Every structure is written in C-alpha cells, then in structure tokens.
Image (cartoon, rainbow, N blue to C red; front, side, top):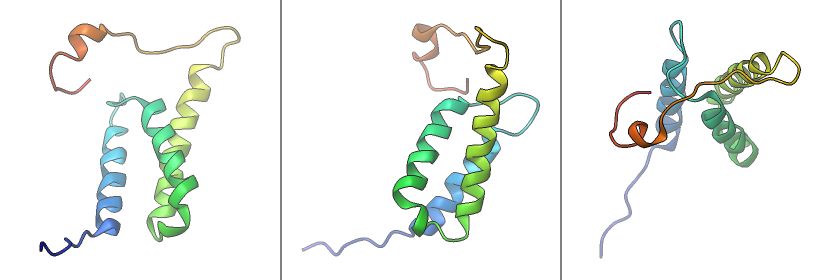
Length: 96
C-alpha cells in the first residue's frame, strides 16, 4: 500500500499568486488577463475562505484583470484586444 503524499496547498497557492503577479509585470502583460482573472475569480468563489493570507493578493490580481478588461471596452461599441494566429501560437510552448 502506498502512503498518501502530503501536499502543501498554502505554498502552492502562494507560488501561483506570485506567478500571476509576474505575468502582469512590465510594460505589457504577458498572459491573457481574461483567462487568469476568470480562473482566480472562480477560485475565490469556491475556496476564498481557505486562502488565508493570500486572499487579499488574489483579490488584487482579480482587480488588475478586471481593470484591464474595463479599459479594453471603454469606447462604446468597440473592444481592444490582442490578435494572434491560433495555429502557429499553439504549435509550440513559449511565451505569448
């Protein structure tokens, strides 16, 4: 019988929040704000009461993503976004 592995979920959460903060650093975002904002929002809805000290950091990341989306739709009847080639973009693993 194999013993159950111990996972440090608090450490994993902390590192994932650092990852998302790194994605939004610099002059241009490196990842898609809508994707991680949606994922983090669902995480707060499902597990927010368990996030402890990372709860506030998570809300700050969500706020950054929603601010980005609000700015992208600030002109009536238009959306500013990033356009790519889905075939070549998904043929290899590299940053966007």
